[in-house]
Length: 100
Image 1: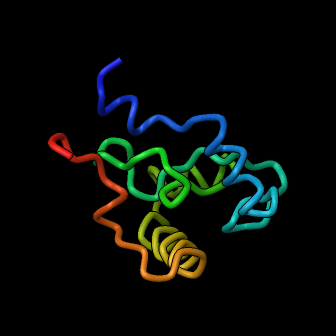
Image 2: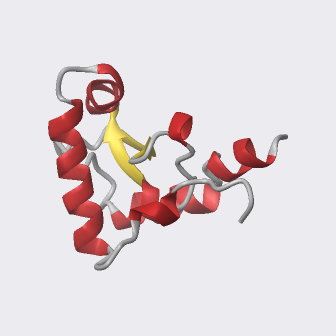
């Protein structure tokens, strides 16, 4: 597995921790049919598979965030949520850097 692929993958431990942190629900709509597998900073942009970059979303909110018309609005909701939990969050540390 390529280093970046591995760094951006979400481990079971991270999924479990995020699921607990997010109260077992979608952080946008509150649905209990959600999964802790949504990258705030997308994998395609080097978003790491770490707790500070992963949130729980239901399938509908995840699709809308990834590909829908609400990407910007959902991104702001996710950003505010993560910054509330991790005050002083440095978003540059959520991105894979080849030479780190």
